Amino acid sequence: EKAGFKHFMLKEIHEQPRAIEDTLRGRLDREHGDVHGHEIGLSDDDARSIKRVFLLACGTSHHAAMTGRYYLESIARIPTSVELASEFRGREPMIGEGDLVVAVSQSGETIDTLIAAREAKERGAKILAIANVIGSAIPRMADAAFYTHAGPEIGVASTKCFSTQLANLMMLSIWLGKRRGSLDEAKARELVEAMARLPLLMRDVITGTRQLVCNLAKRYRDARDVLFLGRGLNYPIALEAALKLKEISYVHAEGYAAGEMKHGPIALIDSAVPVFVLMPKDRWYERTHGNLQEAKAREGQVIAIATEGDESAHSLSQDVIEVPDVPEAITPFLTVLPMQLYSYYVADFKGTDVDQPRNLAKTVTVE
Ligand code: M6R
Picture (cartoon, protein in one colour):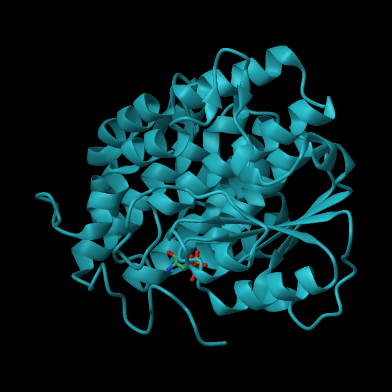
């Protein structure tokens, strides 16, 4: 049941370290800095000959797929596009033999993702499912299934399935990168070791940020609009944070690529708008830091999600939610946790039906 937690969502947020452990079990090959890839359903020759990857998904799974694109491009060096399954369908997509489609779906039953994957299969692409529910429709129609093993997710808001999808996308990228010769030994080992540490790191972030995030939720629960900004690997996390807040607390929120602020949305910022800036120390840090200063100059209530010990973030923001210093590819696994907790606490303060938000179904089987 809820194991002492008030809602399934809160339980599932706290289960993530364990879920990731289950997802990684038997798949990380720490001895060789590699991944055991038999479930991926491709031969080593296939891995080398893939020309492009298409990631198809909806909702939160689409956000995981967006982060997955960074992994596939930077680790496996394969041209990758991410598509909303509902937009891919019926578009006469340019796809065929030599292309790998990765359909990402917690339930494995989302109708748009299923039909989009079918269309791609008919055109000759290979289909790999990343799903949580074993034996569901998408893994059944796919050529192979790489399950997330997060355990049943009851809350309509997807949390532990998101982080385990990231883990599978990262493992897929490492496996492909090793076979294609695009991932060097040292980097592969660094990533595999960092993944092995994830359960511990995630546990620390959940317990270390929980109280501060709850206080922030209390302070900003009545804000009418909330902005989340991020770049690169953390842009999808900004989108995910906004989706979560809309979905369960019915607060209007927007996730934005930080670099797009000055192309319009910065006009929204005033002293009533909390602006969460995802800015771990990564290759995008300096530029995102500049966006934080711009938000502050417009008197936004700025909250940074930053790497431990980032003095500059502390001096510029109202509050700082700290995450440990990890290789940049790993940061989304950690930054998403306080964002999930934030939406949870806002919803709980508002007294909404957290696990069963209005108008939403856990599995979307209608078009
Ligand atoms: O089962 P799926 O991963 O295919 O579901 C996709 C979306 O319906 C789902 O992620 C939805 O956005 C969640 N309720 C978000 O928390």
